[in-house]
Length: 163
Image 1 (spheres, rainbow, N blue to C red):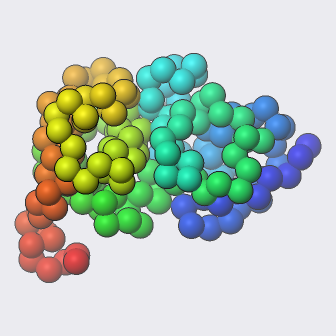
Image 2: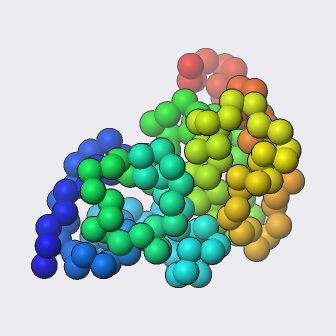
């Protein structure tokens, strides 16, 4: 079985996996990073979204052998960036998560959007956010992304607990 050294959330992790094993299962089963969820298994729903070199990818349909040396960010590593922290605060403030199943993928998609578009329009958000939310929280997702883009602070951040 081949050995892969993956850059995950700022660290290096060695894993043994078949070349065609989806990245999703390597993250969940080998590295025990269970925040990335299995949804449809065909790359349509987005529950399995992670970032690969900053770009959102569906980890259920990406073979571990295709990752190479590109860095991977999962929901467990999202708070390492200021944008990730702002998004997570905005998600909480807007009570975006209902069942919560799709939220890790949603957050990673939103972070990728804000990395490339500092002040997205509703149309840009709607186009970029291709993940499916069975609870239908799309208006809350849009509002949270707008607040995160503007840097609107939550009460905890305003009180000085975070820069």
